[in-house]
Amino acid sequence: MTQKKPMLSVQEALDFLLKGARPVSDTETVSTLDALGRVLAQDQASQLNVPPMDNTQMDGYAVRSADCMSGNASLSVSQRIPAGHVGQPLQPGTAARIFTGALIPEGADAVVMQEQCQFDEASGKVTVNHVPKSGEWIRRAGEDIRSQSTILTAGTRMRAQELGLAASVGLAALPVLRRLRVAVFFTGDELTMPGEALKPGAIYNSNRFMLRGLLQHLGCDITDLGNVPDTLEATRQALRQAASGHDLIVTSGGVSVGEEDHIKPAVEAEGKLNLWQIAIKPGKPLAFGEVNRTDSTGTAFFVGLPGNPVSSFVTFLKFVRPFILALQGAQTTPPRHYAMRADFNWPKPDRRNEFLRVRINDQHGLDLFSNQSSGVLTSTVWGDGLIDNPPGQAIAAGDTVHFLPFSELLH
Ligand code: AMP
Ligand code: MG
Image (tube, rainbow, N blue to C red; front, top):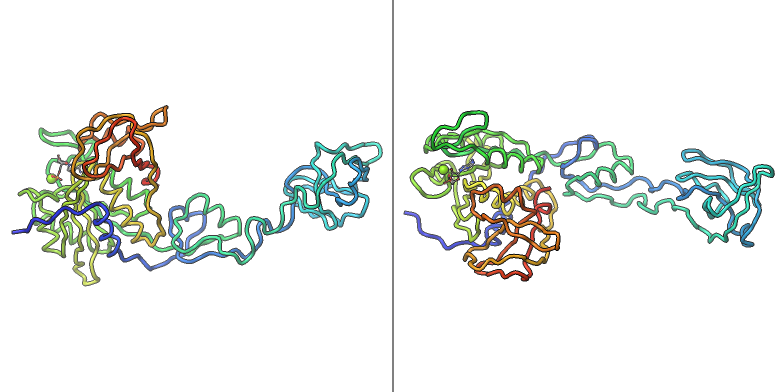
């Protein structure tokens, strides 16, 4: 008989998961064009200054500021320098017509914007109605990035802006950690695929779509083994198949200890398991362990999520996502919470740590979705995020609560 273990707090469970995470170490080189979502394997330094040379931030005239002290200096326009072209050294007493992004010619030390200048076609001279400071409107070489400086560190997950930064210093390819290989399967004889008719007692397998989406967002290589019948033998066989060639197995359903819940004995038979009662709502049962690979190449991590779709969603975000990021070798900071005002009452809190589905209203407060049941996926679509409500904490309208936006959890 299993002994009844005390409930773990959300933080205790998370700490346990993260402590045991073994990050992938194999690396590969990918084109910077294809590196979105990948995790950098090494620090990246710039081999050049950005911008590479001093250039103008404005359309106008490049001048020697000493020539313009009068406030109405008249200078002959000796050359025209568009972006991408190199001018001649600027002679004293002359100005160069210049366009945004063009290199500052040798000798010039300021740009006067064209709105402060008057060009006279007939004489070919420009009157400069401004006393420029030395350096005015010049973007200095290396102002953004200095040659040899580190621009991105190992463990960075490449977003669009990191891709742009890498490209700005000319990096055409990047060393990245290999993608995490994740196998998923879904337990429940009631599960039916969309496209098929629902028989009495059956429901559609929404978790399959949701969990795949969450894993895709995280850049995982997914093997989807589909639905697995509610028998011990089928569950064990699916686990063996899932462990082979994968770093992590994620399942949904069957983690309670009812007669139809086979995850616990199956993982115990094929590896080792911690079945936790976590003080989280929605959620509570979460299975975590390792499954042996039959080819003796070690083990695959295992996380069994509850079947109820909102429980599955919330526990994925709270536990599986940070665990996956750790396995991927990604640097992470905990998701940011925001102090926000509740515009509703929640008089009967649970003794577990609740994650309430809420939405930001036009008054910058939070509205509560009317049905907080763990099966109601509508709440996750309607909501902007979760309130992280401590155990036993009642909420009255006007109270400040911890808001965890989905944007912090779903990128
Ligand atoms: P279980 O964790 O297997 O006891 O399932 C708990 C509840 O979640 C039951 O009502 C199941 O029908 C439902 N459920 C289990 N798996 C899924 C799934 N993949 N998609 C949608 N609902 C599910
Ligand atoms: Mg089930």
